Each structure stands twice: as C-alpha cells, then as structure tokens.
Image (cartoon, rainbow, N blue to C red; front, side, top):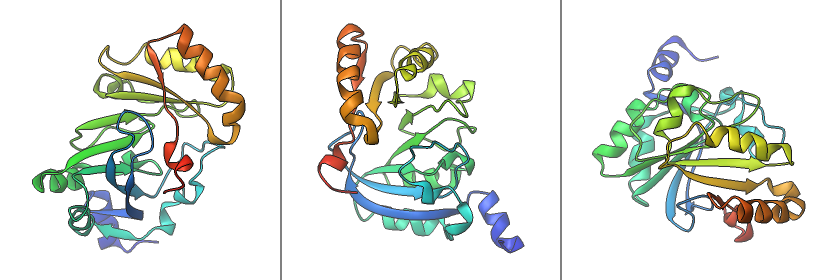
Length: 210
C-alpha cells in the first residue's frame, strides 16, 4: 500500500512502478536489431495466458521510481528508448516522455492499446489482445501493428485489427514463442498469400539476450 504522497506522484506520472530497465537489442518488429534501452513498467490487467513476463502484472511488486531517475539512467545508453510492460499505459506517460525528449531521446512504446494513449511518442507499436481490445483513438496513431499468432483463429483477429489502423501502419504477424514450430509455417503461408503482412520473430530469444 502506497503512502498518500507517493500515490499522488504515481497518479501524476511523476513516479512509475519500475520493474526493470536494461540495455539490449530490440528483437521484434520494425526496429529489430537496433540497440535500445528498455524501460519495463509494472502493472497489467490484460492477462494473456502466454505472457512471458507475468511477474510484471502486479504493480505493487515493483517500487515506484521517479521518472527523473529513469530518464537520467536512460540517457547513458542508446538514443532509442522503448517503454514496455506490463501495460505501460495504465500510467500517465506524459512526464517520462517529456523528460526523455528534453534529453534528445527517441521514445517508443509497446502497448496493447487498452488504455488512453498518454505521452509523446516517436513510435507506437500496437500489439492488440482479444481479452481487452484497444481503444479506438490509438489505431490512427499506431506506426506498427504486431499481432501475436497462437492459433488459426488469430489470423481473423489480425485482419479485423488491420482494418482499423491507417494505411501507413506496418503490419506484422508474430508467432507465439511456445508454439513457434507449429505456427511459423502457417504464418509463412499466410504472408505469402496476404503480402500486406510481414513476419516478426522474437530474434532476441534466438540470440539468447534479454
């Protein structure tokens, strides 16, 4: 339970429940292969059964950290900063992104889109989930749509989501890691028959890096 002063700072986005922050290579989507500093924010109620960071779900497990401290750490690494979770948009991202931009850093977010889009973003990766679908206003602001494919039904969901984004949005299908050997051939066939889509792989897992 947060004390009232800390809760007030968290509610204002001046502190965030920081799970971890680390420097690595972006493994997925359009910016794969790019050195990036990742900021993983705790808290998520979307509840994907195949989530590989379930420890991020409970925000109370992750200490509220001043965004000034997070931004100061970030500037020591890459100029590409990726904010992920959990679901980072459960919190106000405005103060963090303002500080990152003041330091000349590029702000990227990976989100389910289930909460209002706060903050100033140079790149929005929308990864929608069936259980709690994106808010309407995020679709036109998304640069990249990344749909996780776990079974055949997910292709239909992907197409429904693709109809909602702008023509400039890059479309990706990504196999869920635990069933990749079964799903990858299906995605390959699908993309060859529907070439508006591209394949995204979790290359960081093949490289054995965070």
